[in-house]
Image (cartoon, rainbow, N blue to C red):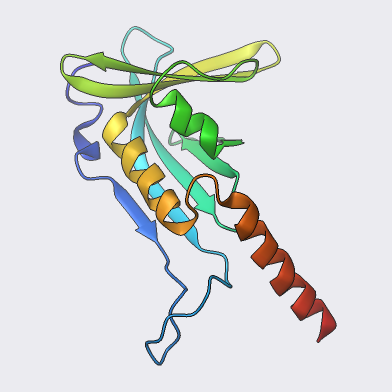
Length: 167
């Protein structure tokens, strides 16, 4: 993997909409879902030459255990996969996953990469993402809901949902 596929990844574009502060500037407890999005470029490894694909990684505290990866190869077809946030984090350090999704780290020519293999039926594809982009995205998600505290986030969301149903 040469430099050109990941040149745009040197500074990942991650956005975290922090909704924990009221307009008067005082912090309040985590009540509203907090989305995190990160746009990056991955390399689709189907041909001899990797194909750059614009990819969005999304996380929302309302669904604290999962993330959504959306691949857009510049066609009308957009491919979306939902996977566990913990799987992405673990796959960043070692081979993890089985069945439809597997993730593993690698280093090529001094560049940290994260490979992701996706399978649906007989079709499958593999992409390589910048480890820097994956790390930045995960860091932002952990700021919203720390790893291991997903259950407490669900309890708050359920409470808010119950309150809104009663009004």
